[in-house]
Image 1 (cartoon, rainbow, N blue to C red):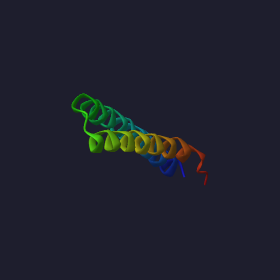
Image 2 (cartoon, rainbow, N blue to C red; image 1 turned 45 degrees about the vertical axis):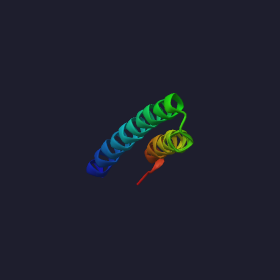
Image 3 (tube, rainbow, N blue to C red; image 1 turned 120 degrees about the vertical axis):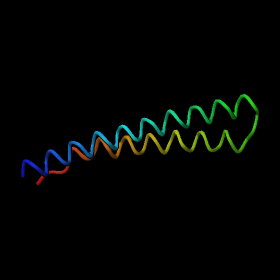
Image 4 (cartoon, one colour; image 1 turned 30 degrees about the vertical axis):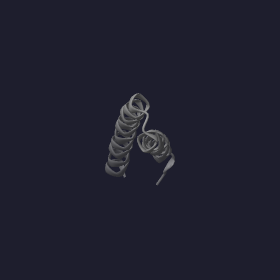
Length: 67
């Protein structure tokens, strides 16, 4: 059971790290879209930021899994 908890903790950290990367990448895309005034890039950047936040939330909720 301890191995499962360690794997779950590692997965949680990985998911949160990926979500953080996705939010940062979304901010870069959004900034580029705002600079160039391109609506598709602005839309994509906002979508990536929201998606990254959802991924981070999912990673935080992984800690609620109990065996």
